[in-house]
Image (cartoon, rainbow, N blue to C red; front, side):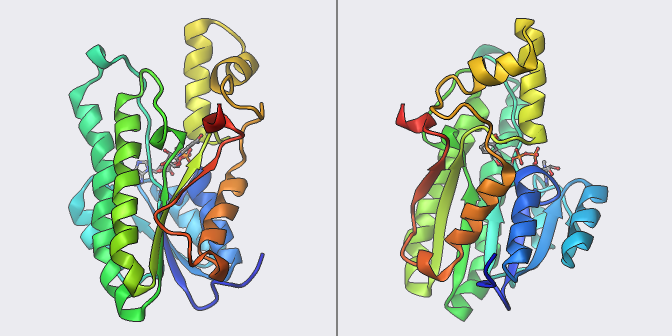
Length: 249
Ligand code: NAD
């Protein structure tokens, strides 16, 4: 790892597990001091302790929790997310709303909260954890697909407004990554179709991907750190697929 981020401060939402924890580790390894924000108190404290950062236990669906977070950061990684799988006609409206609040409104509020300090310093990096589902749809994921498409639009607006202030904003678009969020989907599909977990991975999740292997959280984190590096200064308003060819098909 380089030390491109020496002297920089980062804030990672959903930083206590999965892709977020990998981002926390990679940003810290690149030299940043990291604020770990997550709803899970025990894992948040553990992640912050591991990297010598700060723990913030927060439910990001509560706007007041965002006001209480630090505003003086150089790198913002909007990563926290949840999934709910259901046909549209049965999709619980309150779950739909909660997903938009966590995955679109909270990133908006956090960008709004942290931009003034980035503008004041003339440098900032916003990385929004989108998905292949920010670029394509899958059945039964109405709230998630709607939220990720919304996040894509938000990210582009932040790129346009931030450009003259030295702030870039980009989306990272992973395919299926080996995390607890995907483990839950594998379990659910295995039970629903009565097939082994390996078959769910190969024949359901990765059916559309050219590379038939789950992506590792560290691969995603490495791209996030690179988007914060000096050579990535001209990449803004972009959406970078990391999907084993899923969106190429
Ligand atoms: P994960 O479930 O492993 O981690 C998500 C983290 O967010 C958890 O630590 C959880 O505690 C936290 N969180 C959930 N609700 C929260 C809330 N209300 N307030 C604060 N924190 C909250 O999930 P992951 O797979 O690491 O996903 C991280 C991001 O990457 C999500 O935005 C997800 O949509 C995206 N993504 C994941 C995959 C994948 O295959 N895993 C693929 C594409 C995109």
